[in-house]
Length: 415
Image (cartoon, rainbow, N blue to C red):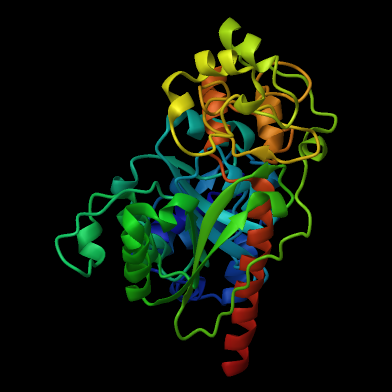
């Protein structure tokens, strides 16, 4: 038999008991005695359990469980001064989430609407608190002042420019608004928002201007930077805007991770990659790509083949070097898309005339081989293509954790 800690916490919240100290007073015991009762190793004694039940005004049965959970699934009540916590929004298939975990950050809640992505998260981490729900329906006020970081990559959406200066209310209906709402409700010391590089120029820069203005008005100092994943241990040229907000008045100082001098190559990323399922090119595409050398693209095709393969795109402007592209071993892959075989986004294997397999796709995004993806083959490609590269996320997470811990030390000195 063990105490059902989750039920105890829920009942405390219902009764407005904010701290263990307050609960201990109601029980007429010391806080240390209560901590001992709630410890993982504690074996409940009937009289003590009844004391807790009486204080919470519930039957004993509501706060005990006869099943014993593995230790790693039990939630520690006492806060760890070295633990940094996070809420992640738009979690997807877990690229940012896994990077945060590997960077030493404990995420208390993951919010994701796509059920296949939720299945992926739950399959890999059964103990994660995954909320598979429309974010508009999720309330975050219970975490106010209790979580260190809010993170997530909200989809980029345009705003209606009725006025010259848009505020929080003007962004309603967008997923960015929900991200900002979570930050406003939780008031974490730090937040991380990431998005595609195109956000910088979206609607002539006005979308980003509005985002930064709204987040700043919530009480945060804002900085942003474009990071290329290839310089952060990822075998892929993938540029993302990473926006960091630090709460004003806390003296927090976030610094971005230092880029490496050289890019990570495809060879490094795919070394000893396990065999897995994947899609195939159509016969027409395969015949054309067979003529392209590693590192080459449509310009390496015979002119008659290129004209037929490219269609109207042959006469359009721009470099179009992503079309009919075969990646070389000694370079990073181009940015992965949600499908490896669409026209204009080909990412052909260096030696074989085929798209990258699902496992190769995952490696290029720096997912470990142990991370599985649910759904059909196309579902798996989509989840991986939309993900934040794990290794880049890990390096950012290390900096976030240090920022929070440094902030705690400063505040302790002030106290």
